[in-house]
Length: 168
Image 1 (tube, one colour):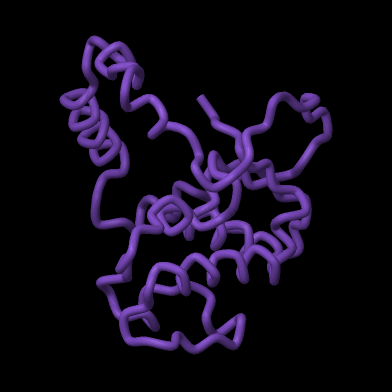
Image 2: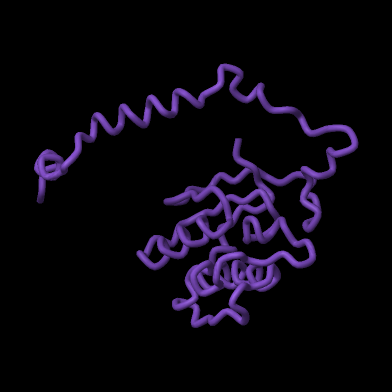
């Protein structure tokens, strides 16, 4: 087995210096106010924070089971992570998603004419694995949302999903 110091010796940069550079850049962006910099959504616009597509959950019992991997977010990043974990044989995967379904941006943004501005065969993940060919060069929102759901079904990600749940 290769020792980490052997690998570091072959690099043409100093990992510690790079880590320090990233820390300094991060520190420039951290505000003293922290979360207090944000405004509470209330008044006339408070309904925009609610999920308009799913029925509200009054309450549910806490989850007490154990999973091997938790993925936060059910958009393409979360779906790809879940899919690749399943392909690697890790079946105990839970995706936590604020919306009532998978899809990320394409779950929330369902306005008329919503479409991808990147060619579909580049933008849509896992097309080869699913045997999918996009119907248009620039796929429309409903097709992209349906593709997200197809990924979740194909990789059995709904089974352990925790939808309508926010991580704070």
